[in-house]
Picture 1 (cartoon, rainbow, N blue to C red):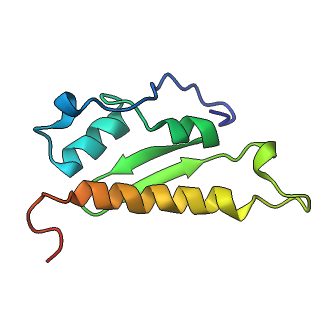
Picture 2 (cartoon, rainbow, N blue to C red; picture 1 turned 90 degrees about the horizontal axis):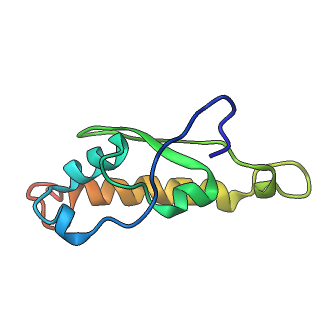
Length: 104
């Protein structure tokens, strides 16, 4: 994924509904983080990954490639916004629309 010195053997793809139907949102996120489920393809495309997840935390790390920089040498805000969107989406998924107690 472009992380200097980091070997990545992660798979990317879409989780099959049958594989995750009986799992809570947190269990899905933990299985994704550990590599039991594939990581979202957007992580491969933009060079970031989830490295930690528990009941109260989701941590992503990313290393933007040169093509994600703007003309003045700064990482484009869209790359950073996508990272934030993924964090927030995973938090929402961790709670799950059907998981009890998340919206209390």
